[in-house]
Length: 479
Image 1 (cartoon, rainbow, N blue to C red):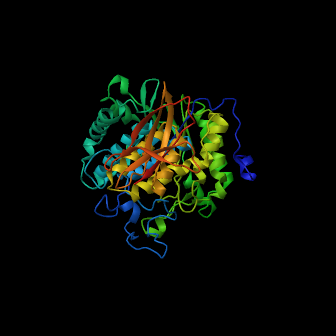
Image 2: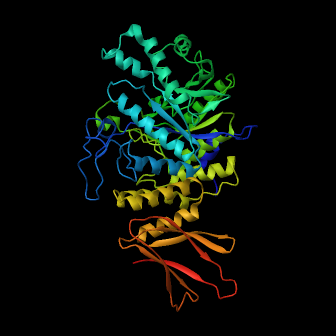
Image 3: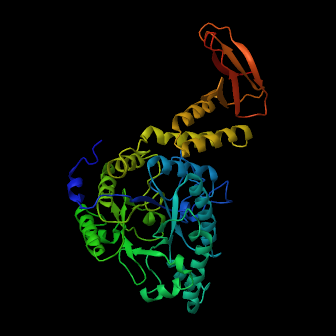
């Protein structure tokens, strides 16, 4: 597939003498959503104090603070069904890990809720074999001081203690992203702290946990480099529209600055289309058009072919600013397919995941909703998760199909000496099921050779091989 299809390609095309090598693709993730029934009410990031998700249109679309609508519908970031779906999508798309927006663990505004959801997210990235790291927002300090929650004299001490918590909860985890043995940490700023305060903030960390620190757009004291971001501030000179020429100039300038840094992170993004003005929370930051996916293709190509250390995918799920990469009603799986193509082109020619594979996660999500509260079905769906995670996609697909049509399935066929061995999975009816055998699968007859009662789930069946007789065929049927 061609990565580019229009003049935008030549505008953002960037050729580097360095290959992508072992660059990691890291999705910037917002763990800040709350929604019923996981939470008692809709959180600010779905409402912005203006929209009412309890109102639905004729198609069942809820009123949310976004121009775009998640394929799952609006969700809670603590929902295990959603988290399973998201990490499997990342795995299937060729994404290596997440960068989670983190505000500390204080019981102030929704920071504590975001912290709990960050912990849940990292539980699921561990299960899926993805790496994770934090993007610390020091603007939280300014807000806590402004609200009288924190004295300004305690700002550095509080930030130091906050990062000690990050060290305890995250940095020491084997799944945390490290560079040359040190944890990677991003900061969306600095917004409150000055450059000379960061060394004092990091002084509370163990020597082995002094972070490889990246800041926004420019490197400050204590940072090894910076990361790029959609430069929406530059849209003000063009009636709120970020032109391709301006974007090109920003990216050129960022990479020029990065020549003097030891490391840096390049960001790729699909669009920017916020809803802040419509929500009444402030003026819009401007708009960067989607251009039928060309902005994402071009910025991703550039990030993969320049000298950056990591590629940051901006963002997995910031609905308020419209930079979503996860599946939506508007774009489907398109942006994840672009990531698959880019990974195959620049990182791993043997990467074999396809657009059809992405639907496995969506089908599993739908079955989780359909069979919620049914323990036997949930055990089988747990097995599907493991199969997808481990790359056994054909087996996962067969199990999903069996669950969708509510029938059992035989899979995992192996020969063990003089025995044939296979697994019995899929849907188990309330009366149990029968394993049947025949020498003629078209006309029968079929002989019942085993009965598996209700209340059991996956089982392993073994049968002796009669090498002198005709071949035998097996099937499973619900009783």
